[in-house]
Amino acid sequence: LVCVAMVTRQAQLRILAAVAILATILLLLNASLAPSALPYVERFTDRSYTTGPVTTPGTRPVGTTVSPPVTTHYIERTPGSNGGTTDSIQDYLPPGRPHHTDANSDSKSTDPSVPGDAIERTASGPGNGTQCTRPRYNFVFVKTHKTGTSTTVNIWYHYGIKRGLNFAIYPYTHQLGSIRDVDRVMKLGKGEERNIMCQHMTFQRDKVESLMPPDSYYTSLIREPVSAFISFFIFYGQDQRINQAKGGGTWTLDQTITYQLDQRRLTMPEGEGYYYMGNGINQQSQDLGVRSVSDSSGRLTEEAVRGYIDQLEERFDLIFVLEHLDESLMLFREDMCWEVEEMFYLARMKSASKRSKEPLSPETLRRLRQVLLPDTLLYERFKKRLEDRLSRKGPEFQRTVEDFKRRRKEFEEMCTDTSQWKNAGWGTIEHPLTEAGRTNMQCTALMTSDVPLTDLVSFLQDPDEERRLEASRKIALKKWASFPSIPRRERILQALRGREQ
Image (cartoon, rainbow, N blue to C red; front, side, top):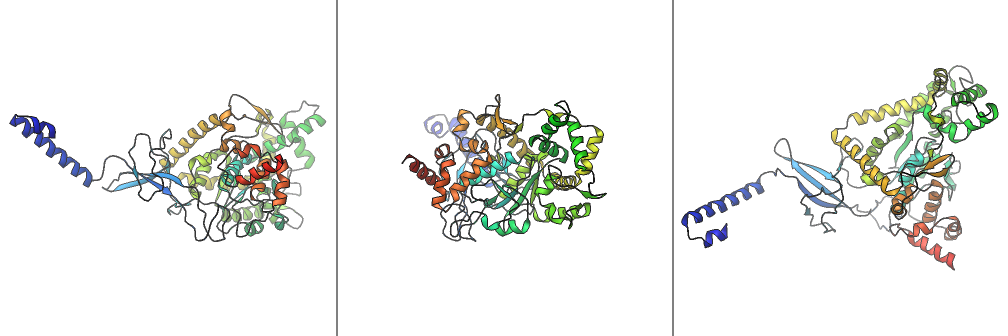
């Protein structure tokens, strides 16, 4: 318009160009002063600051916080309902959106070009509306039997290995059991503290609290009791042994469970009102420590079970429910201030048996539910607690869950060949890793058994160099050496060099 105004000789055109230039200036001034109708996206970088010297996460003086890897997010600003603006934190810059680089940010790059829409990241703590400023690292996950924890626990292993966090474990042992010997739990280097406890154990509050930092987040995973019992009954071979020994290989699942109930007199074995524990019966309650409230004869009453569940509800921040696993993970992520992609999981150890799908008779179901009352009380209490919290969530949370499901499915298809199955041991199968999955640390960690993962984290955090090098001989270190993002990778390379020598 300026050029037209300068070169034209017609007065009318000059006047028209001048009016157009003036209108454009007025529009620009109005846009700069009024709330924008278009989304505004500001790039910023998350960091945690320490109150003392820090080397790597997990190796720090007590009382300090961890400096995690720099994580880039975006604030999306949209007009509010009363003339103001509303900000929401985004994991990724939506494709095609402009961005403004924070002058204080270490990173000056532009759009990371992550495919798909942005996912809103709730910036509040566990229900208290406080701003989520940095990830939390300290937590306890009680690994229960046959509830999907073999899949879930690998999320925690990958997260801890990637950040150099310390695990509460017996050295090179994949179960804590009843934690009889607290002193046997692996000692750490001077000034270090434990961050994650996530192995099979019988929960004992006093012992766990003596091992973990006071700000630890407590969680676990439970499942509908009848399906959990059937999974345990088949996985540990009880169904097959009874079928072969008593049924000649022809009995149905209903018949083998009925035989088990009859032989063990599990329907109120000690008289009306007392409940049996063990062998898959009320295994979830047992894992969460309900035996601690049994009487001097080892018997368990309904009143004692209800009272113990009250104690669990007071101590545990969140208990996942397998039937709402994705929603549970998104709530955990919200409370812990983690990234969406850090919650991806890959299904492991799927039962190869079709027996679990066989129907049970109404009478067998009635007897099982009567026997499984402790697990049922536990399940119903925490399922309701979870559903109550979910009911208070708005549509944004549901969109986050749906987007997580979509992205996790894409991740699974990248990591594993979903058209193939391989034997995973213990009568289970799982998908094999793809070529891309074998070169991706997250894929590899999520599809590795917890036994070698425990050996790996023991090796990485073990301050005893002699024991560490001795243990390295039984650990498949080569595949982990190829991932440069492991904070203590130098220990792996050192052990491999020692092998070569």
